[in-house]
Structure formats: structure tokens, C-alpha cells
Image 1 (cartoon, rainbow, N blue to C red):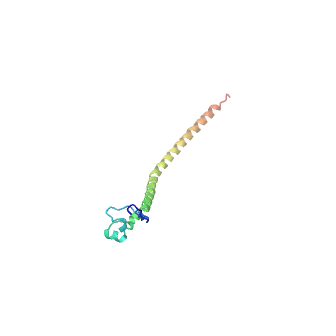
Image 2: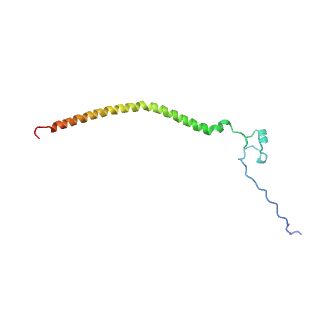
Image 3: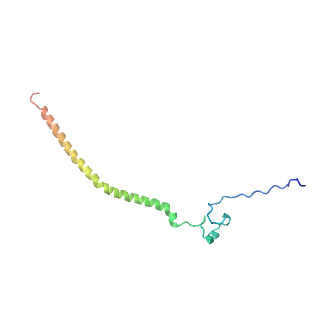
Length: 118
């Protein structure tokens, strides 16, 4: 019959799985992405081994920044230490002068108060 429905259910639509990695330019489709074909095509793929420096780069960057910070701190400390010592020496001398002036003022005030005519 021309208008009759087919009693069989329609075949299921094939499910498309997402790519495990972004497609690479010039790389074959993911169905053919096997380590052997990628090695033969000399294209980087999800199975290629990273360069050793790339694998170490987070730790290398972290420890080199730490080392540079320690080196900078040591250099800065050695630069500032003599200046701070000089400032402390000058402050101590000024304090001695101020203490001497206060002592003299106090003695003069006591001498003025010590009169016979109280």
C-alpha cells in the first residue's frame, strides 16, 4: 500500500562523541587519530610526549622566582644596613645633645628658685 506506515521502528541516530582534544590544523579526523598515524604524519597529538622543559616549567618558574626574590632581598638588605646604622648613630648623638640641654635648663630653673628671699 502506498500510504501505509512501516511497522519497524526507525534506526537510532548515531551518537556523536566530542573530540578528546581540540582538532589540530592539518591533522586527520579523530577517527584516524592513532599514535601510529600521528607519528607517521609527524603531527602533534594528544599522545605526544611534552618537552621536558615544558613539563618542568611550573616548578622551574616558581623556584627561579623564589631564588631571585631571596637574592634581591639579600642585596637590598646589604644596601640598607649601613644607612640604617648611620641614621641610628646620628639619632643617638642628637638625643645626647637634647638630654644635655634639658639638664642645663633644669639646673638653671633650680638655681632661679633657690633664692634667699623666699
